[in-house]
Length: 402
Ligand code: OVM
Image 1: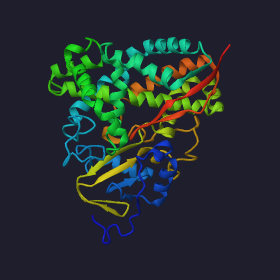
Image 2 (image 1 turned 135 degrees about the horizontal axis):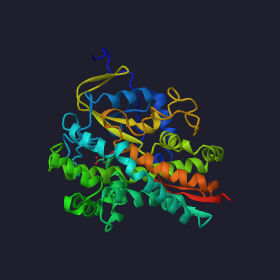
Image 3 (image 1 turned 90 degrees about the vertical axis):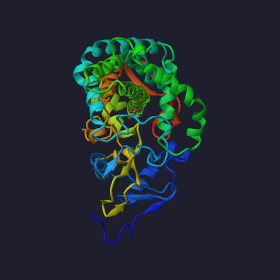
Image 4 (image 1 turned 180 degrees about the vertical axis):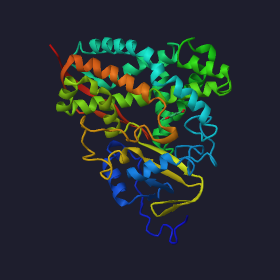
């Protein structure tokens, strides 16, 4: 269906969502985009954008009309060569998407993770005890980075050597979904080396015999995916599994450092750790944006989006849409945050979300048992990335429980 007067009333703005000013604090721009209308034209990039929950949710769940195979960044793979071979999960549509998705979904599913739980809880306790030797520390590096880097590469089965490449690779990858701005250009000199390291780790010979990586190769032996697909599926783990959890953990630690009454609540009810993490993912949306590409002329809330057009979905804005959430700007453990789009929604919804929640539950539980009070020791500093809402530093002061 096409409207009779297509796009006559389409609001338009020249705001740059990837400018340093907006990345420093995206909330005012997000509120303005939500208010402007259900669909907005971003004239600077010649794309459509949506910032309201209803439209973001609708686009995420309509993979038939809004494809991923033309790339989920600004670049349209129909016309531009991607910087790396496309992901078989993120940058693919059914039917190609489905076998790799099914394989990874099982390997990273709640059942499979049960064997890791006790070890990760013990690792979190050990890390927290070590960090709490000081009353002041940087939670961004010493907890939010350290914990995933301690447990996740081991779970994948990576060798120790070269793990320092994981975060820089992810930082470039998430920048590369945006425009070719300074953030991307500054990363470019390192891409070849980082990519070569990542690709090398995806080979069967470089992965421990137990671990997510080996399980992906075993799925290829069973014929669930091909042996050509296996290394690219391993690459998805290394691409999407590190920076995302680091910034998700930083988000929940920031939330508690700035909401002391919520911390007291978690201490009384440590079973709320998972809800707390999802509420922080809603509230901060560590992954802020993804794009889709229209596969046909689509009518969305009265706006006609032509076949082949790029559409930018503001996950972070949808997660704070007052049309969908009561007091959206409040971080509140009483809320049911389910339905947030911080992990996406629909067939591409984060396949690693159970891993992320387990990491968060382990770390928050260890902290809740040991920390009576936490607060910011200094103003935290943002790390700018075209896709991620991240912290460069998160200086905390803590009081240990007696
Ligand atoms: C992938 C991939 C990379 C980045 C993000 C992501 C959030 C997936 O390579 O499959 O999902």
